[in-house]
Image 1 (spheres, one colour):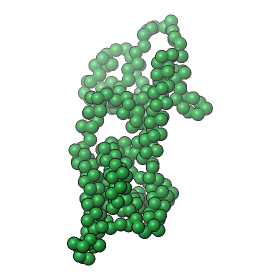
Image 2 (spheres, one colour):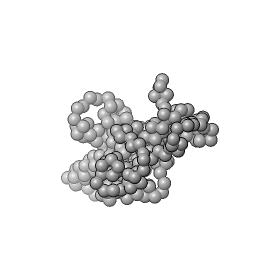
Image 3 (cartoon, one colour):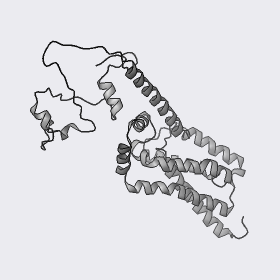
Image 4 (cartoon, one colour):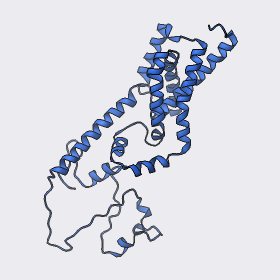
Length: 276
């Protein structure tokens, strides 16, 4: 026990340390897109989140007091969660959709996306490194050293590995990156050496124009019944209006590549060898 702390003060500071560690656990898990108890079948999501937060807090409690583990594990993890938390609020854990959207977006689109995120989320994200620093300060102040009990350390890491899948965020990021790299390479391959042939017809008209409403809902087009006349060109030309078509994905690359090409019938994977 530190010489300048009496028993009551130390107990009070340790209580604050436990509380801040639980808060840090909650903030980090939210910042990484959440975690799940994949090896347990607990029906209510609220109970799953509470148990997950508690178990991860136990894991953090053993790492925070040590200077080495705090600066090499806890604090870097806090910074990653701080950066990703606003995105996690919308997309959840990293996946192919989020990764390919990041690769395909322009600076102005990225700026617009970031501006649409509530400012409160950015402020909450900043609480992560602040809470981590407070927990570290309290741990150093109290002189607590939970890692000396090897049995508790082993139990802590066992619970984490079994219930939380601590590498889930990083594995999802890696897998999403590999899938994105594969899809972009395939697109570039067919851009350079397209296998599509010419399609000709003798009927009139000879020119066909396919108009796709990018990033817009059908019920906001006047041609589909929206009261504001915002599609004057489509309203006046002699055109065939497709009604009832559903998007094949929630983001551009996934939806357009699947709507304009035929998938592999054996495995369902995307192929560019044939138009739909």
